[in-house]
Length: 616
Image (cartoon, rainbow, N blue to C red):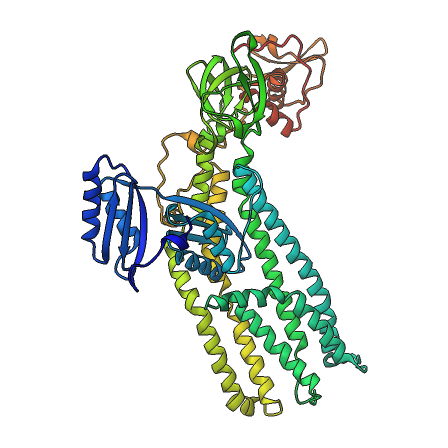
């Protein structure tokens, strides 16, 4: 059922809403919901069916909203079957584009809430599946002039890969345009400005050559801005690209008119170099912006990189049982999964057989491996260290702890900080205000300013250049981009360091924190032990026995730290480090690994150890 077939207004101003109700147990429940909905101002009719578990409501959208009606249903103790989708969107060039997508989607019947982020290039839509289908939502985005990135394959990783591919393509496109624009603009500047610095570079057809090169820049670099400005115009709005398109067009078409009409270039100056440089410099900014947005998504990709790609599950039972390797997406709750030493645990579960130690630092921050035995829980993404074991899968797919962490980070990056609402309000009126100001500036310089300050110049050319200047220097892109980019970067860096930020509001409030209370030191560790100090006893000294070096104290040489004929520096500290690291180099224990890494960083050469035995 599509939105077009189910949203028939009963009257001119009335719309229809269909809410699937969850939790009704009898006809009396339906009567209770219907009675309370009818009492709401703006609700003309409400019919609730216990059999179909649906409420069909005719309402005045100016007096009551779908959110308010759903809130009434929830207050009565029932639920509403809502759906949420997170779509990657390509083609946004500034924060006004995000606002346009949000407004367009909110006009679709059945869509309850929309949150579009320009920084993450995603739109999150909460909707009633009984009223609107996914195809309707995607069509609305396309009708607004943007593209929904279609994902081939299943799973979160496929979606992230598709988004990354789209971002890489955008970065490559912007890079090509920057190179072409920089080369052509440099040539244009030399041809246009050479005589001003005393270099004779005038020849027949020079201005026509400059015009031709500028036209290439205008078409190759400027098309993106003209298309974006046209999309905004179709949606009855204006954005940053509107200002860029207008500013560059003023300089380009005025100069082209002067050349085509054969006007005296000494009196009617041409500004081809300005038109070319405008687009080139703005495109450089767009390239840096695209590259920055690509880097902010690194946190999600690193989190997803913690997941295992495949799982080894047991098929069958008894003598006929066999281990089969399958994609992690194919693991089901209840499957028996086999994990060998050094492998990643594919999903969450409970150990049923075997024992091992597991590195869970990626989730808990605990630097030491945790012992696992039958009955203990294991977390997908953790690394099995020493033993082999089997476990029963208890959470798979989006229900695993790691998937929930990824979702929390995505939710935080898509959320809006309170200060962003202010920035969006200012940005929404900023573009029309700048356009109005530019017209006023142009009129001033045409009628009064030119005669007073540039009486030897053509008034129209002077007015147009000042008008273009106002349009270009006032682009509000930074205003709309600053807050969402800060949220993306802050939540991403936090996730990489084991700090999960719930939403943008929490991040904004964190700026006012003066005191931090930690429940344990493990909360702020890196998840990996490291040597901080090497302390040598006061009585320790180096001794030579039969040409061998050993470390002794008042009780003589320690039998476990004898050096096998290798020279050791004349330093008790380095000698202790040498002996300790040499003894521990064959161990897989995290503390042993930390000692060995520290010794290598200090430049200490280690000795070979014989008859090593690990006692745990």
